[in-house]
Amino acid sequence: MVMKHSKYYLIGFLLVLLDQATKVFFYGKNFDFGLVAITFTRNTGISFGLLEGTNHYIAIISVAVLIGLWHYRAEFKGKETWLLLITSGIIGNLLDRIFRGYVVDFIDLKFWPIFNFADSYLTIGVLMLIIVTIKKDIIKKKN
Image 1 (spheres, rainbow, N blue to C red):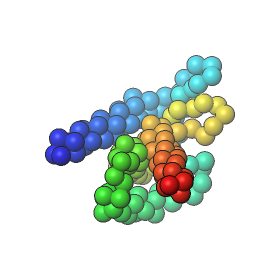
Image 2: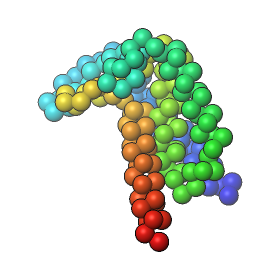
Image 3: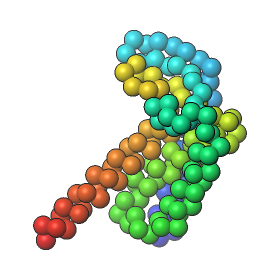
Image 4: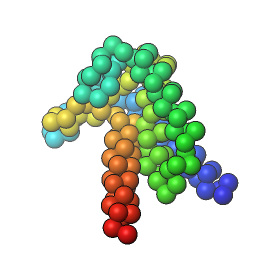
């Protein structure tokens, strides 16, 4: 059991490290590769530019969500991968909020708001958690 948890902690650490390393590498840089661009932005809000200027409040909410996820982690049995992505995403952006005062975004698909790896972890984790939960409920109702 300890090895299983150690594996998740290591993967989570590596995901956060990847997020932070790419933010450092692309900090202040702008490149256009045609369909995809690197466009450095500072984000003091949340997705889609919402709640701009509320960095401190979002940081506090992020800590509260992390505490809640840790407290109720047993409820995520069988959904550990999605919980790992969600917590890695929260931690990656929380580090920015605490140490920079804003989140570094740089991945620009040109048809979508600019984002980073932590945002991707969060989005994939939340969407998959919703899908898996709905699927499980549907199967449960059939039986």
